[in-house]
Amino acid sequence: MISSNNLRPGTKIEIDESPYSVVEFQHIKPGKGHAFVRTKLKHLFTGAVLDRTFRAGEKLNEAEVFERKMQFLYKEHNAYYFMDTETYEQVEVPEEVVGEAGGFMPDNIEVKMMFYNDLPAGVELPIFVNLKVAETEPGMRGDTVSGATKLAVLSTGAAIQVPLFVEEGEVLRVDTRTKSYCERVQER
Image 1 (cartoon, rainbow, N blue to C red):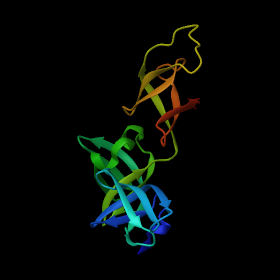
Image 2: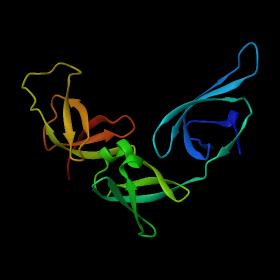
Image 3: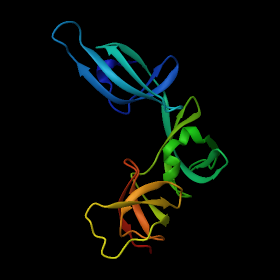
């Protein structure tokens, strides 16, 4: 059990026998009445966002979620395949569980996989990944407007905004938290 006063972003709780992760929380103490905690919760399997208010000090069930290091192998149809780096066991994960993270996973990347009741519940990527630009419009010479961007499709299929000077075939460092361009990377 966990008190609603101890909720923090990333805390995993159970509501109606379903696992949720706290995305945002706000402890509110009005002038009149009792204090309460307003939260925004994300369902670990469906990704549905739920706004929920709890009384201050209310006891909640903590979801038993554990993490394992997994290596992404490949994607086939509507499923991603991962391998446990310790036991070499392979796990099939539905596309809905992987979500947006699938667009930023090159083959053989190591990720943290969250499990709830022995079912995959989510993927946590490294903060930065290096991905190759598969296609983008060519940059125009002399087009140096500061802050101007264009759309680039990465080798994994994700599309992000990049500066005008980025060309096809270049390797970029991408921030997986914001899904945005950071810098160009020299291939070795």
